[in-house]
Image (cartoon, rainbow, N blue to C red; front, side):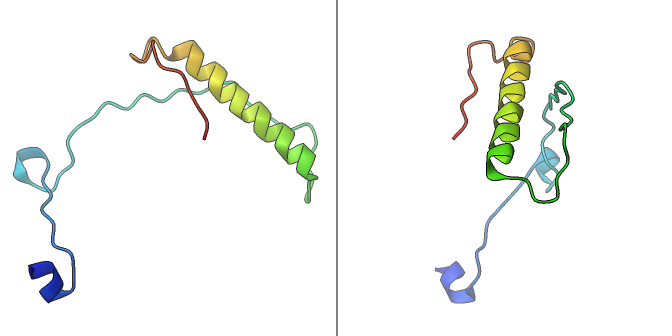
Length: 81
């Protein structure tokens, strides 16, 4: 009722110590092999873009599969939507 009356959403958020400070979470960042395209073109053909995109996704999958157990995700698999 109040949100409709004021025409704005009212929500309560809290974090550490009841303040609007976010809770601490661990962040794992993995860096895979460097990918440098062999030819840099201003207007690449769509098949070249698809090939580079496929190679990038495969490298992300390889890096994930290599390090997923050390990050605690040993039973997970990566899926692109």
